[in-house]
Length: 288
Image (cartoon, rainbow, N blue to C red; front, top):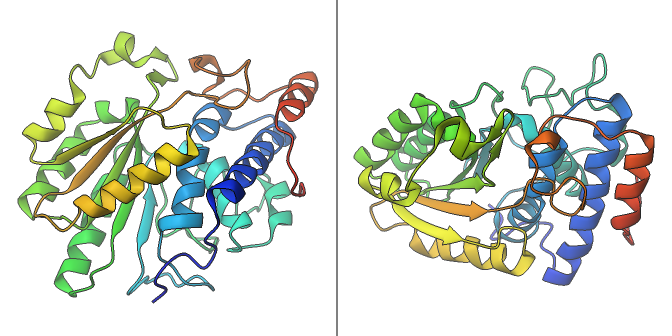
């Protein structure tokens, strides 16, 4: 088992990676005029900090993940940010990002497993299911006396799915204190603001009532704040309660004309918009 990520970077290096991954996202979605840039851009700091600072894993990828931290993406439509992160971390060749959403590509619009893409342990995108899978993995680690952690990411609109709350009950009942769930709390979903579609009201109180330890990260697009968030979440693990972090982000973060709007949930930029975005995302690393 690795004591830390084999790709650990300084915060300054992570900032540069974040710029490049945002470039990857807009180029991938533009290339096929299909995909979900908004939530992907909003979660870049989370993925960069996780894979380049906190997640304990080994390369080459091992599907079983014994003795390693595991990550499950429940809101699978933000696959562009995950694929770009995995490629930049060395799970597969960066050049493969150019195949996103194309026929016979391993990089499908929502993550799948039958193509054997390294880093992906479960198909996701049918919202509400990922937390259940993460709970099963966390319980399996407990039964095997494996002391590593299980991480999962969900969307806030996804919390409107009833299966999320069944899984939340399960995790608390089984004392899954090796489970760290982060909610991308950007207040937007495909049909509009979450509060207008179906308000989540006091989300912290809901999770607490279900028996979870609740942490907050009001600056989910700050590299340092998310780094500290993950440190705090790890410190809170092992205390008999599963941990959930409410991470406030801006949909479309990093690209000014996309930020904060549900209209960029699943819309690709045109040629002019792509260039405008790339002009804002100057990076010292190399495009695929």
